[in-house]
Length: 151
Image 1 (cartoon, helix red, strand yellow):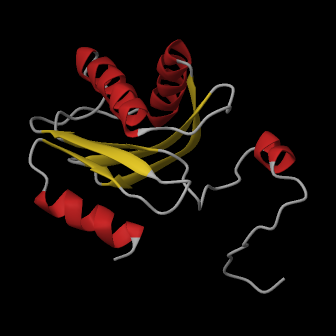
Image 2 (cartoon, helix red, strand yellow):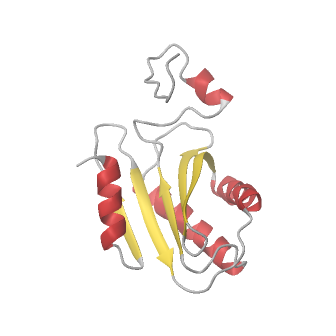
């Protein structure tokens, strides 16, 4: 089963919360999935991204990638995080710690509809290179490039 397939399976069977850890060699991706149910509120994605970054900084982490999925009634927020500085791998405990902090912050300010899904994961082996410093960090290494157009 692929990591994506495993994630969809866990999302499908998860109740209020599910924790999963996949061992794919040395750089194992770990993620924590949590959800809440209730009413709809307006979502300010830019404000949320800034708030997530601030909350993570307090814990010593930073955002590698933030993805939005789902719909207005049940948004899905996917975060890939790493330590700041990125000197050690992100563990399942790290993902759970980040998830608890972000859920408390989201809920205290009703920043998302009460019915949302938050996924926090390590960058894993297929980490995206999204920032200038990611490219600098992995300079000289082989990478796989995927796209929709021939270069």
